[in-house]
Length: 65
Image (cartoon, rainbow, N blue to C red; front, side, top):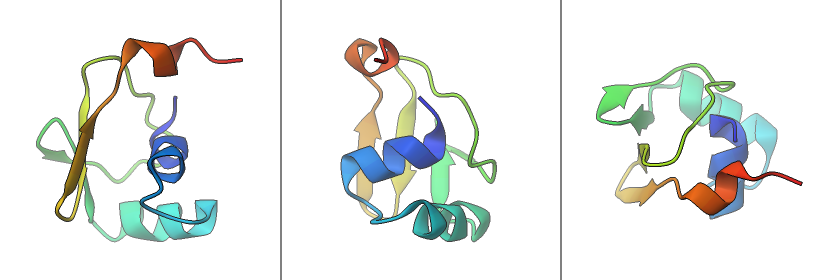
């Protein structure tokens, strides 16, 4: 799953455009590191943080449709 998709799936942003702005604005961290690539491919175990919210990517999200 891509980072921008994950933010939408978690309900932290409402649209892809909002995800893009938050990521490029320096509001998103992956595994403690600032991430500014909205297309970053997440893998199981990655920890994503945006503001006070944080979540770990689970194996079930990697299966896809």
